[in-house]
Amino acid sequence: MTANEIFEELNPPPRLMMGPGPVNVDPRVLNAMSMPLLGQFDPAFTEYMNEVMVLYRQVFQTENRWTFMIDGTARAAIETFMVSVIEPGDKVLVPVFGRFGHLLTEIAERCAADVEIIEVEWGEVFDPQQIEDAVKRVRPKVVALCQGDTSTTVAQPLAEIGEICARYDALSYVDATASLVGMDLPVDKWKIDCVSVSLQKCLAGPPGIAPITFNDRVAEIVNRRKHIEKGIRPDGFEAAGGPMVASNYFDLGMLMDYWSEARLNHHTEATSMLYAARECARVVLKEGLQASFDRHALASRAMVAGLEGLGLRVFGDKSHKMPNVTGVYIPDGIDGEAARAEMLHDFGIEIGTSFGPLHGKIWRIGAMGYNCQKHNILICLAALEATLRQHDVSMPAGGGVDAALVEYRAVGQ
Image (cartoon, rainbow, N blue to C red):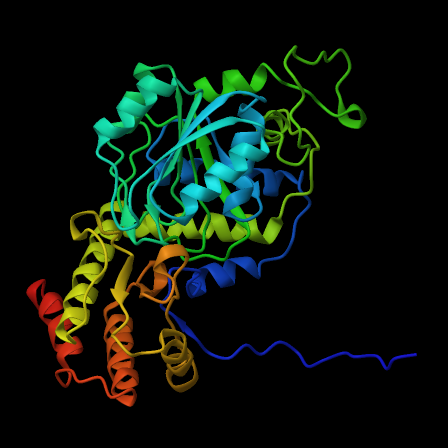
């Protein structure tokens, strides 16, 4: 018999997480997560659920009734939308400009969709006309794309996409996990049918719950497949005629009943994560959406100026750069992974590696959510300079911090 192993209590090392996410959680969110648990149908708790819906309608800038939480990380919400809306053989169009477009493609394929992709080189985005041409040709049921893709550090313009999709009777779905509240996303104004996210980026929360919003166009399609499991089915209920959604946990129709006045006993809500989601939204709205956008945009300008002040080269199309993540080319002759490990070991700072065709070519440095503050940008730039000097990279002494400070001083900070 092996000896019992109990281990020590958790004591994670202090880290400044300046990668593409997750990031350090706002202390107010951590405090909210420590609040006592309640039963999922306790009136006090269902009121918190109602408050979460109200808060996220404001975050998403929508009047959508169906705005609530999916228990799981970001891709849980992606799967919930796709498995509930897509039927085998449905056409889905995915404009791919990075890793997460490929993720959307795979999830749609797992739903047995007939998926067509269009692609641009990593670091570029689509002109809306390219997307319209593809929609007109394919005539998909769903167009699925990301707003910002952290693998490439660029953001796809979306202002025209919802209108394009509506023109050809396609649903528009957007994964905005990497961008929400770091940049503008007015769901109703842009006529986007469904958007889902998670908390661990600009919302400054932990991964594990996924806000989603969708309009009546989506709800109508979901309700054509409405089914309720036998053990909780109300008397007299008759299932809709469409095929049953392949997932019980991610069945959007039952989740709609769970979050509505019906309070269908579908699952046990992730109580502490709901508290986290509530506080993330409350903190953002207290700051103000525009103030949040401005804070991330300023940090982006400072980070770019700082990296260029060190003589480094920023990756991708700057005119479409995400404000919360910056790609930077690794200097020639440098082992990028060794340098990242040294920053973590020497300074307790994490920056991101890269995927696919960019692996080993760029680092991805984030400044988002709670971490999107002047002192963190300056500390990260100073640590990166010191680390590169250990690798004999020649650069202007203090050039990164000095250049970043110029951006902050220009706005009185």
